[in-house]
Length: 546
Image (cartoon, one colour):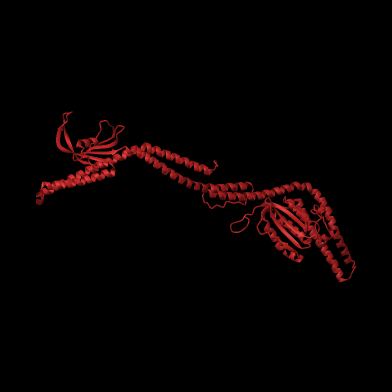
């Protein structure tokens, strides 16, 4: 499990998430404070500029009213009280806008205006201006507090320490860190264009809490997204590993010489190309295995050929001489009878001629079979191992021989419909099955039933031909494969047999390196042969060999 690709992908994803989460928390903890102060500083500068611009616009408007009053006869009649009323209205609007700025930007704003009075500083002895509160953004001013107390509360503390952040000709920005039981603030202290003093204050106490809240929120969001990503990554990794495992199974089947399983995916990426390459490799290996099996069969045959050649030659000559002796004697006797005009009866003469023709045909058929047998035993026949459908081959032979079953009055039982594939030389397999079928037709008796079976046993495919009739004596079962051996010589000659057919079967199966045999059943005899099995391979549209 730990070595699987899916496990490694998920492990890498989990480690990546942990690293990203850790970096995010550290960055938020170490940098968010400075970023927060920087944002507050920009907001304070914007507040200073907005308030200064508001006062400048107020001054311009009031100067415009004053200029209009000096030039307009109707305005000249306006009293000073009326102008003060207009000024108060503008001041009220300014304070409302300052309140909105303070509320929206979460800042406290204090504006002091010069009272026009001078006092002597008792410490320095210098004249100093006195100021009145023009605007204070507290929700409400405690009436019991004096102006000095409000300024003192808003301003620097004697026991505070701080750091200067930014200084210009118009304002200074600095921090004030109170004692352990006091708040810490960011201050802007500046002088407006109209001479008023502006103080802007924002609490820094919430930065650490904001960082902690942000970290918790970041962790929760990251974990939730990570869980979702893990689920998504599981299916993504599965979509990649599933075809890889399919290719792995395909490779294992190829190693076990099972070439019927093909890659069926329709991917167009690298995995799909690999699958197509595996299919091509499987077909190439199948062709190579076919060639190799053919070469191995031929090699084995060559090794045995030299050892058995001399013995076969001697046995062949002896058996041929024995088999040809009877038909030659018959042909010679009837030919002499015809030449000496032993009988002048036309019917007898035709009988003599038919015997001569029949015996000549038997000799001709025997010679052909002997030549085929000799070719097989000598190894002169090229054995070509193919992956073919046994069911289809047997069905074709039976269909072509249906008239023989009708003439014999035999009933054929063959129920195999599914394709069964095997390795073998199709020409030799055809000759083997044809001999079995002919043998069954020649010996069928009783119920006149012939049965054909094809059994896929996993490693081998067994094809059997059974016919009802007399059994073969058990002591004769091993001898029937020998050339010219006949269990019932009279009956064999009756249907024109010469004892070579089963020898051809034995030789053909030996050429293919496979087994054949025979055994008695209660109501007849069953012959069989086996081939190396191969699974059925079908296309999507029709059951044909790939």
